[in-house]
Length: 395
Image 1 (cartoon, one colour):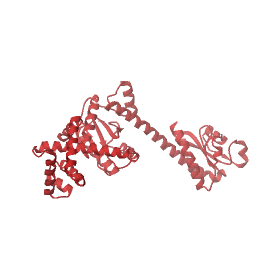
Image 2 (cartoon, rainbow, N blue to C red):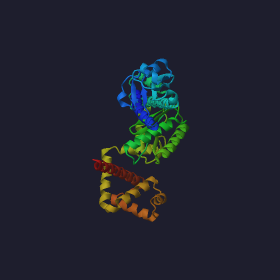
Image 3 (tube, rainbow, N blue to C red):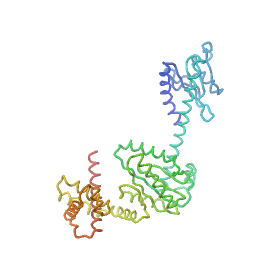
Image 4 (tube, rainbow, N blue to C red):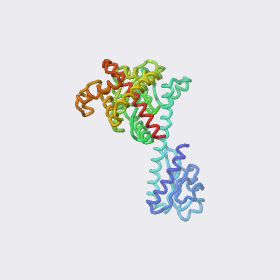
């Protein structure tokens, strides 16, 4: 039914465009029952066209010459051709005029209409499959597999084999675009990767969940996961012009571990700015642990207190400069030279700023590991305040 409704909307635009190109010639499109669903003579929409009825009955074109018009109630002089999709007549196109002179025009309209209906049917089928894939993903990552029969049916419908071992991958794309544009780009990306070799639908269940691309890979290996993540990174950078965050879980033999895998990499991704992070790497485990700890209310209070201290200890016009300094230092793994190059400042200037930050926050006496933990807690507080300010501005 969705195809019929969309086809009806398209049909009216098509006849109007075609008529304009043909100097105002009358053009009609009829449905399977022979009723006019689109016409340059809008008062005829909804009326029966006997020529179309005959086309649907015979499957052949019907030519109506001037002397034959009386035999075809609701019709005029012209040629009427069946719209054939998958060897089935789904409607009729009709062009006014001498049938012998209008045949080429009518055939062109027929072919174009058939192409559109086939494409519409394909995309409608893809949309249904995408929705089913997303529902199946939610079953797996939220631990809501309530009926094995339902799960098996959905798995077979989307063509996912679902054989062990398994891994979960999520991708987060930050963008300055509005949400509608972002959503369109994500759908385009989904369409592109669906056609690519590395996204084998028999071994990959994928969809958009929680504003992220979520993929469950089956029959996977560590090397396969690495190649998959790298390919996904490249195509997303090309599509969006930014580097996404891609988080990859450990490999599991049991599909029931997917909720835990998803929750883990979801949290790990929140602590990563860009690039690929792996849960089975030391850095990935550390990011997960830090994000987990930062959910604690008392830990958040520590960060907020440092945020207030830094605000009070710096001039307002230099606050962001010092926050940028902390971010660059943390991202550079405490490498002073790398952080200074990123900030385009001298290493001595960076050292001066860091010492000033340590003094304001009263963490100068801590060792480097503990100082880094405190700085990262501060940055989490900065993110929270930034988000709150953005929400207040929108309100």
